[in-house]
Length: 130
Image (cartoon, rainbow, N blue to C red; front, side):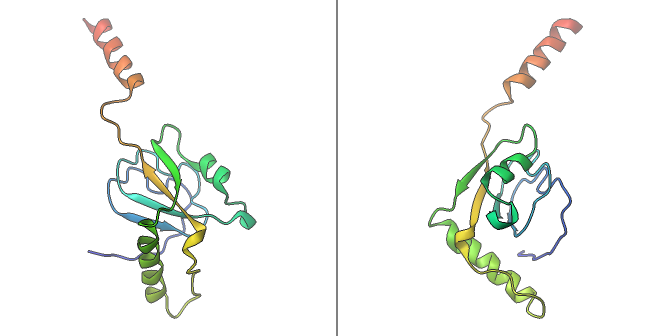
């Protein structure tokens, strides 16, 4: 089901996200994508408001396995669809920007196994507990 929502985010956006699509049209707040294991986030970049690549990187949750990437040609219709949906849902309110060039993709980095640091902790506990 395609669900549209509007939220005022104060942090932990997309925490433990496992699937779906999110379009962020403002500041995502701190700790974005902490624990994210799937889905995609399209983050609007607005350098005039201090939301450039570096600002978004500083907001990513510690230990989050995500990359910031430019939109690919395949992403543009996805962002446009979400922008159209928002415009449709908020027809009586201020119209959001429809310029897909101002977005970047935040996508999880697949992990084939547990992180080495977690594996070492588990091994160490086994050694201590016998």
